[in-house]
Image (cartoon, rainbow over all chains, first blue to last red; front, side, top):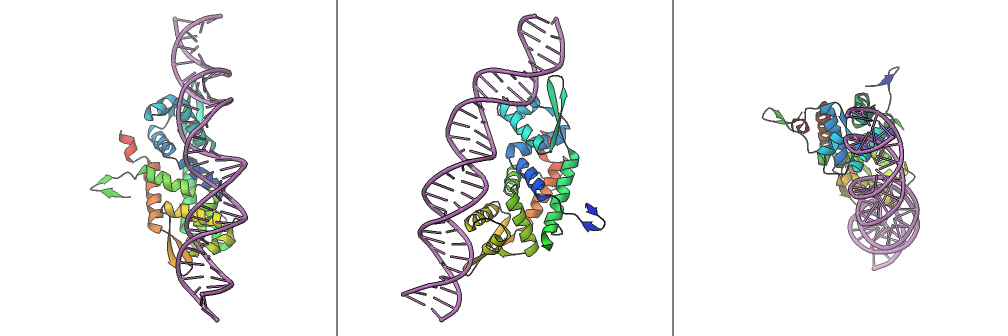
Length: 108
Length: 108
DNA sequence: TGACTTTATCGGCATTTGCCGATAAAGCGC
DNA sequence: GCGCTTTATCGGCAAATGCCGATAAAGTCA
């Protein structure tokens, strides 16, 4: 659990909300699962997993990227997407703090 | 971790996405924090926490309710909202399974 | 250079979301 | 019954979302 001195630091709830919003779409959540399993994946491969157009898949990936959940690295004409595991961990920690009721929102 | 026999059961990702979507709004996420701390809260009290109209607060609460995150119980003219802690736990378990890569989406 | 592959972005669209004020519905106390 | 309080719902609006096909951009390889 993140802390400064010995006080629990409440995660930035707006940032958490932002990540949850990105994850809160069936397609994007499945994309994240896929990326966790594959470790890396390009847009074309992701397209094979869904019956969606390439542009739609690309847009979903960019939503995940913009939220910090996914990173991309150019690889020739392709771009390799992968999970930002630190962000995921921060999200899980943040949720745990929130859901445990030990966060900042409680003492105001 | 939920299981049947000794096989890990992957959570229903659409349901998870639905809950994440409900939580993926700054106001609603804060409402959940508030409810976790207060244990129960009526709409009017929630209104005091935000600079939003009563109708907007009521709508946000109903989104949380519809997603199963919150329950409500009539109490005179008021209705008492409280966190469904089982649902929260299921959500956290589901995310943990997904994020650990041990869910169903990996073996297809 | 010129075809080909891959991805990102643009324009357009129908639908959903988020917000409000107004109003309806329902319980409480007199 | 009559006010009062509290909440839910309605109508309306602007903005965001999700989707597509078309197109641009950029790398690869002959």
